Image (cartoon, rainbow, N blue to C red):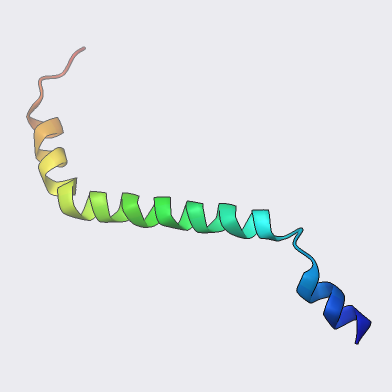
Length: 52
C-alpha cells in the first residue's frame, strides 16, 4: 500500500511527460504542415535553377 501511495504522489516523471507531449505536438504540427504544403514546396524547389 505504501508503494502505491508513493507512486501517486511522486512527480519526478512529470517533467519528462511534459517534454514528451511537447515533442508529440511539434511532430504533429510538422506532419500537418508537410501534408498541407509539401507538394507546393516541392514544386517551388524543383523550379529553382541549380546554384552550382
